[in-house]
Length: 321
Image (cartoon, rainbow, N blue to C red; front, side):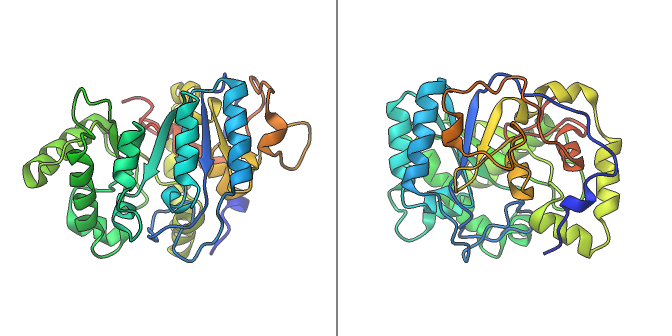
C-alpha cells in the first residue's frame, strides 16, 4: 500500500475553520464483507478493527450534551459491528436522526436477515453505495455478483417502504466514478438512475449522491501504482471552486474513528490527520463533551480539493447540485 499523505502538499489548500456542529459521524470499524477498488478506508473481510460499547457510550453522551441531532454511521460495513443495533436504538431513543451508510450486500449476509426490518422500524435513513446502474461496472468495482445482490437488497428495502414517498423511509444511492475522473452532474445522473433502475428492476429511491474518489488508501495507492496520482491531483486542483468552500462537510461534521479519536472528516481519519486542538497529537471524543468547536481550525491537505472540485463532493453528495 503506497502512502499518499507525503504527496499532499504541492498546491496548498485554503485554510478553513469549523462552523456550528451538526453531524457526528462514527466509523464503527474497518471490517467489511467487500473489498471495493475505490474504498478510501481500505476496508475488507480480514480487518479486525471494531468500535467497542464504551466508545459508543461516549458518543451517545456527546450527542445528548451537545444537542447534535444527526448521527452518521459508517465503516467498513458498520452493520457488522456486534453493537450496531444497540447504538442505533439508543440514539433513536434520544431523538437523534440516524444515517446508516450501507453497501447493500451486507443485508444478505448470514445472520443479517432481520437487519432491513430493524432499520425500517427505527426509521433509519439509508445511504447505500451503488457505484453504477449497470451490472458490468458494479461487478468490476465491487466484485462478481455484487450488482445482483445489490438489486436484491434494494428490492427488500423497497418492500419495506424505503424510497417511496410519504413513508418517512429515506433511501439514498451513492455513485463513485470508475477511475480518476470527476463525477458527472448529479441531477442528470440521478434521472438516469431512476429511469434505468425503474425500468429494469422496478427500483425506487429518494436521492442520488455523486461522490468524488479520494486519492487516499486503496484508490490512492492504485493511482500511484499506475503513475496517475499527480495527474489526478492536478485535475482536482484545476477544477477547484472557491464557492464550494462554505459548504464542505468538515465545517459541520465531526468524524470519530473506531477507538474514539476525533478528526475533521473521514478522509482525514484515513490519512491520520487528527483534529487540531491546543497542539495535541490526537483528541478522544470523551474529552470534547460539552466543548464548542466553532471556529476551530480544520486540518487540510491537497486531498481536500476532492471536495471542492467542480460541483463539489460530500457525504451528502454534490455541493452545487
